[in-house]
Length: 133
Image (cartoon, rainbow, N blue to C red):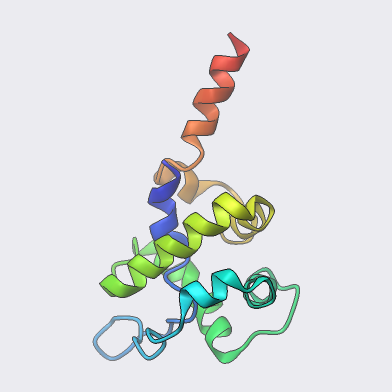
C-alpha cells in the first residue's frame, strides 16, 4: 500500500537532525504544512531541494539529509507529529503531483528496496495484472 511508504519517505517538511535523545529535532514542528502544500512555489522549492535541482533552505537541507536514515530506521526517530505531517505531505504529493512523487522515489529509493519493503505500488501492479487478463 502506498500510504505505508508515505509515513517513511519524508519524515516531515523540515524536521531533521538527530538530537541527543536519538530523535529528530522538533524545532520545525511549527511549520505550516498546509500552507506549503497550497503554495505551488513553496512546494516546488522543497521538491527541487530534495532532488538536487535547486538550492535548499536550512530546513530543506535537514529534511534531505534525514530521509535516508528515516527509511532505514522505519522512522523510529520521528515524533508522532512528524509522522502525521509526513503522511499528509506524501499523500498530497503522490495524489496531486505524481511526477514529483516519482522523482523523489527515484532519488531516495532507486532500487525499489523500500517500495517493496513497504508494499508501495502493489496496488498499481495488481491493476496492471488485471488489465493483462
